[in-house]
Length: 146
Length: 164
Image 1 (cartoon, rainbow over the protein chains, first blue to last red):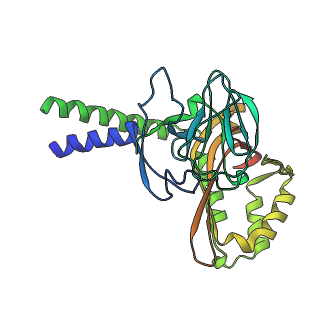
Image 2 (tube, rainbow over the protein chains, first blue to last red; image 1 turned 60 degrees about the horizontal axis):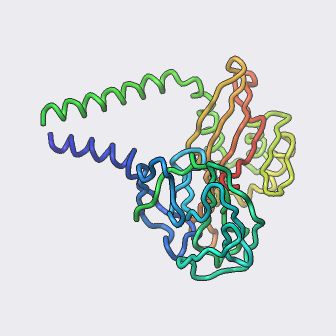
């Protein structure tokens, strides 16, 4: 009986609350290495939403294939990249998690009321091989907890 | 304890029942089946004896004559089944180390069941010929599908930029 209850609780937890994911690719190096198991907390965000610096899972067509990116821009902010440096409202953003930077450039955009700007930690790779940019809040599945 | 177990089992039973009813009544099932068949066809290696032209022609049956493919990111649009068949024939020798998988497929039926709009994530798994190492890429797509006779065919493919 206990096994059944434990099984049901585990099923609910790992299906709707803590989603196990396996990382692919190198875009979040050095913070998250490829081919490792992590968990996404779907209940991490209340009405206030994600904060700058959070690493979040972003849905593509659904919850089975996800981007893992870091939030650098919040709704309403102006975000751009100049010479590899992320700028928020015209000021450089301190990013201690970035080890190497290539001279990426991206014109400034103003985020909508439900938009975030996300990017991977690995800025040593080519910008053409790295997916980053604006994302709608409803695509954010949750926050990576480890 | 017994009450808790009863509640848990009841919730699970309701969920299973709802899923079973929903799955049985899913009008998009033939569309999903057709997409699964397409992925199977792409994933077949050349060991079944089919030559590149024959396989490409088979792949062509999954598309309408006037199919439009828009991959975005500066790629030129592709128009017509004949173009796709030609491209597939040229790519064939390389596709033996290439697999496709569809995830999170959602189907919305339209036009009295004669058309369907499909939102999905396509995973592309490439296996390096030299060391067998696999790499995975994924893109989000919107497909417009049309019923042509007994079959469903892809009439429009549009790549979606998840991050803009």
